[in-house]
Length: 156
Image (cartoon, rainbow, N blue to C red; front, top):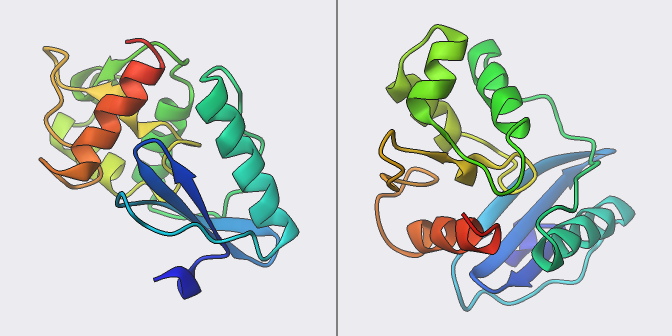
């Protein structure tokens, strides 16, 4: 697995794999606990790791990374709405769906396809009752534990 990433940053919840393509971030992926770190291979991967580490130290640290254009127009609109949620706050899938004149399930599917988690904070989207129904296309396991950790990190 490490060969496909330009860096792997160890985190309190597992690891984050960073993949770059030319001058953009192509992907940030949650990796399970026990994944070995990988030193950044590129300057952009180093920059991404620095910003991710800054967020892990202070959830108010922002991101200024060049992200590869990805997804459908609808997915990009969901990711834009998610990126506007400040640290320490959440919105429900329904809240975002109403803003976009869509359905909560469609918002959830777009969240699950987010190629830049943490930088585009899909962990800040929760069920209408504030519950954690899933995360990154998982309903249990280390990914849901990761969402819990991120929300607690932001003191939600």
